[in-house]
Amino acid sequence: MEGIYWSIRAAFTNVYSGWILWNLFLAFIPLALSVWLYRSQVKSRSLLWWAGFAVFIAFLPNAPYLLTDIIHLIRGTRYVATWVIALFFFPLHMAAILLGFEAYVVSLINQAFYLKRIGLQHLTLWTELLTHGLCAIGIYLGRFHRFNSWDLVTDPDMVVVNTLNDLTSKR
Image (cartoon, rainbow, N blue to C red; front, side, top):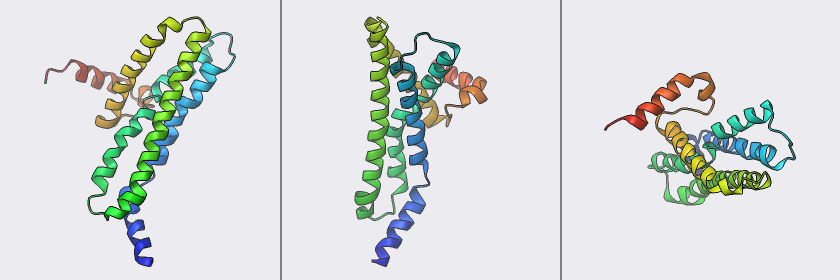
């Protein structure tokens, strides 16, 4: 039994460093904001509402980004016993991916609810497509350029330059 414990502990030490919990936390920020922005009975869109909306858009890619975290399972478990992967890592990663995806979907449902409530339901499809596109760019910047949502505030020039370079490069 002690050997099993040490196998699992060694595997977690080598593969898992707390990033799943951090990424889940980041994924639930836009979900919480979507409830406040889109489900509350706010009558007017104040400066605070628009600031919340900007944070919502900046953090929303963190929810579907969890899907790309499967790369850690693939890279980090090469020398881990198959049974440890099957019983511990795979379920943990799948739960994180599903929770992140759920946070994303519910955020978009809340957005559509808001558009319907204010009489703009005809814009739902276009808003969702735009949101998906922005999230795809955000996921790309996070996975390959290692940007974080807050880099839009702390280093906006670098985010814009990298984004424009990638969108316009002729590789």
